[in-house]
Image (cartoon, rainbow, N blue to C red):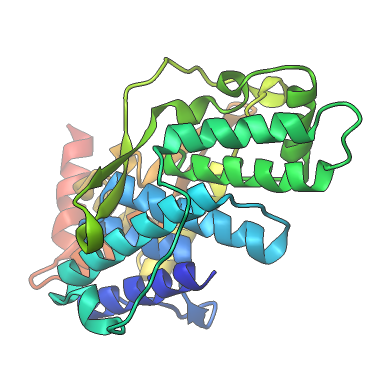
Length: 314
């Protein structure tokens, strides 16, 4: 929990350093952790793998704060060592400072458990869950805590998802039916760790490795107990609301979206049909791109609108 909070403060301070607003004026509060991660991928060159690690850390924090999670010493060590590595890298990237400058002189980490590759740790955890759920055992609570941790690690590979009690139930039922790790955790087959250095210079990175091909199962057929968040939570701006937020007429907003290619950008726009009616949704990324252009020197929405009308009349 403390590590996730430390990262949130680091990301927000790094964004402020880049003169990026981290305060939601409408909600009268600062942005949440996930939104800060998304902003940092755009402004601070946070990679996809780094963002995945930060999302996983947030899921593990949520499990500890709001539910009951069981994290083995091996997974805890790997995650925390990777966290120290990433924190140092982000601190250097944003402020040109080393984490070592901010740590006390005397640190004595002691462990009788040698670090292992993340795939070996995941296998061990899955076997432990199987053992805890054997007939006659009464360790369901601990098993579910370990299941929640395994599911949280999938945030490394899946950008937006949530874990519900129903998902835990389905995973538990799958284990009791004899389903294997590949069936219940297909998204973790490509997760790896890269360890370099030794002694005080050791670093740990989570990486993406080649794994078996995976297909998504739909609806209640999905055994992997992963639910992708409703994308309409991300693409929550309608055309009218987006224009109003920007202080533009719908016509001017349409012209600006056309000029920037917003409707063709999958990170900015999506649509669906309901009874033959097309419904368009726009993300905060679309709002930011349009807002940035509007504040740039020489911006002329009337000229863009005239160009838009001329192109559409051809």
